[in-house]
Amino acid sequence: MSVRERELKICFTPGLVELVQENVDIPYRRVLVTGATGLLGRAVYKEFKENAWYTLGCGYSRARPRFLRCNLMDEDAVRNVIHEFQPHVIIHCAAERRPDVVERHTEAAMNLNVHACANLAKEASAAGIFLIYISTDYVFDGRNPPYGENDAPNPLNLYGKSKLEGEREVLRHCASAAILRVPILYGEVERVDESAVTVLWDRIQEGAESCTIDHCQQRFPTYTSDVARVCRLMAERRLQDPSLRGIFHYSGKEQMTKYEIACAIADAFNLPSSHLIPLTEQPAGTGALRPQNAQLECSRLELLGLSVEPTPFKTAVRDSLWPFQHDKRWRQTVFH
Image (cartoon, rainbow, N blue to C red; front, side):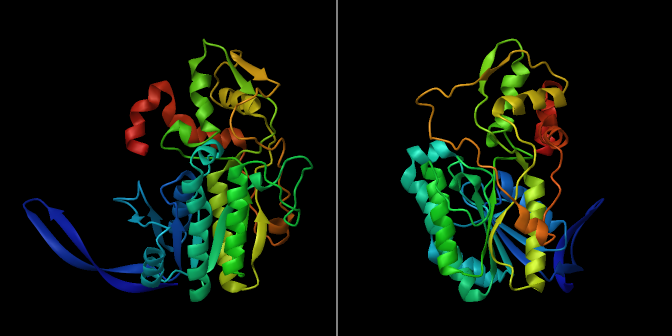
């Protein structure tokens, strides 16, 4: 469903510039995506925009010119955005998701990962908006996988604790909200260090110099485009079924250590991996403690018909990293 509105457009013809009015179709369904400048937020924004949703993305330091600049810690700013746009759905992707950064800059991370959640949840509840909060597998300690939606969380690091506290704030202020927990993410990146998966790319391409990579922690790399599609399916179901709420899990199915991820990336691009050395013991003092295996059990989404078959890792990682090959780096300015 859409509504017709008139929009001003600048038309250029040889020797003439005109300002004309045109009728345009504006999708009726409206979604607000926070963190739209980030790794997951960009994929979520794209998924909704390409599927007949009127989509508004907001960010902060990198927002302009493409997205709305909004400080999520500012209650008045959040309220004004929501009142003016009147979304049916909010997808809350904004977060400090780097565990080691959370350990070093705890106050700023807690503001974004906890207090911003409370601000959004209060406004969503007051306006009857469906809120989906993106959380993490790091709410679990990784000692007894797989973890279902009803299993007791026990985060090992401040990042996991902050996201769990964010979940609690969301559900405390907006009982009709949904929590979507996901594991390590990768997708189309602006820089390879934007994801803990794609950051391995430079080590793989170096080729000549040997390097060690963790071969202890079990990971389930998950493609952001798949997560974005799940968010859209949940949003569209919720417009039909108000009972959709609570905690959900979504994850890729391929289990790998970071060493195995690096080898799979090398194989996807027909690059050598003999210089990569598996590190089978975790050295002391390597940053925030990570769960050994926080595999998510995802049956709730599957039973509701809202899950998405994960894109095969090698296929998705090729799509994500091909512009960063040495012979294609000139294309980054075009596609990123």
